[in-house]
Image 1 (cartoon, rainbow, N blue to C red):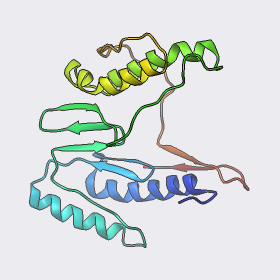
Image 2 (cartoon, one colour):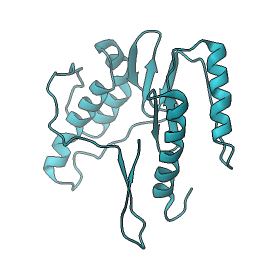
Image 3 (cartoon, rainbow, N blue to C red):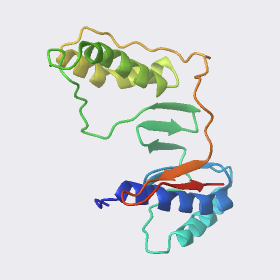
Image 4 (cartoon, one colour):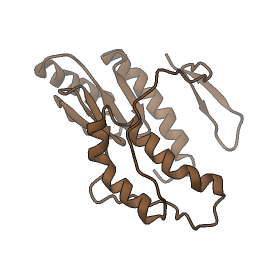
Length: 186
């Protein structure tokens, strides 16, 4: 942490560990930097066995904290609830959103899009209108304090697919002092 190549090293080590974890858990595991999440339909006892196996994978000088047999979990900026089959925005306690003031010298296009972008993000992180409405008040307050006249409203997902390029299981490792190295995961 905090080193010059910290992010790149984290991606490389994470990809290696993820490949080992996928052998044990299959494709029901994901990783973002130093946070990972896995789902299994196993019994609580079998899940505890898997937890011990994962701990042995990390016995190479790394520390890991595992919480098993949970029905609801906060992962990055979303709360995932398996019991209710729902998800909603999550922010850490005492985290107060703060946005660029509308009177700032940022380009007008950027300033006009801030409230709409917040609305899209909250809608995307909400499985339904109820989840959106329970998460929206602090964001609405921050928008108003920033000088914007915008009302947050839930936008249900559309069935339009984005036209992105197909993703391969490739991670690019780009050390600052050598050529790029392509690593194929899988």
